[in-house]
Image (cartoon, rainbow, N blue to C red; front, side, top):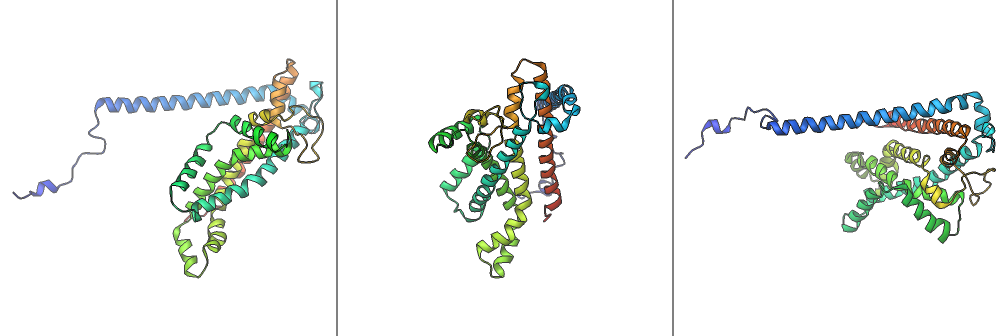
Length: 302
């Protein structure tokens, strides 16, 4: 029995033409649920931002210099955020100094040098899972290891290390994706010219992957700057009246100060907390804008 010519004619059915009415209705219902969820999230975010600006803009605009450079006071009208703002800057600086080289180094090893075996797969899976662990778990880790076991106490160094450990998985994943995006032909060309593997990674792969790595690092730090739970669990002081002189000194941060002011009964403290939230939102937007600029400006289109 020979096959006829009609057996080899392509089907004229369009993609999705065999779907039943029930599948079409289910797809439409699922799309509607996703759309409604997105709209609800956007409306809730807009309402939250509007409430913050409505309560805190007048307090911030009245005397922004005094609010940004003033110290904490028991009089809400005189309270400022200088110590918490500087403390947040110190925390972000130490966090970046710790997690950036470690995260990039781990990404380079896992992507370029690590053998493909079960141990590597196990490590990679756990790194991806650690990126979604709640921040309070990292606070417990920092309390048990840095504050108590290493006897750092509730200090600037302990808080920065806890935030750094929390940011490490995100930086490693972002750096690995940036390294993986570099074409293999770049490596092969360097090898053909006599470069070693480390020279290829250091002079070709890493510079090409740096924009994506910096973007992931900034986004991880922008998450860390707004975290309150790890710092509270470690025991950093919520209210402090002096700037740290050493990494072993206690330090406060903007989220801790906002948490304290919102728990007080006076309405003026609520206004000050909203004004501090505006400053924190401005810092977050600035960091995200920097990440977008670096991505658009320095990303290489292969």
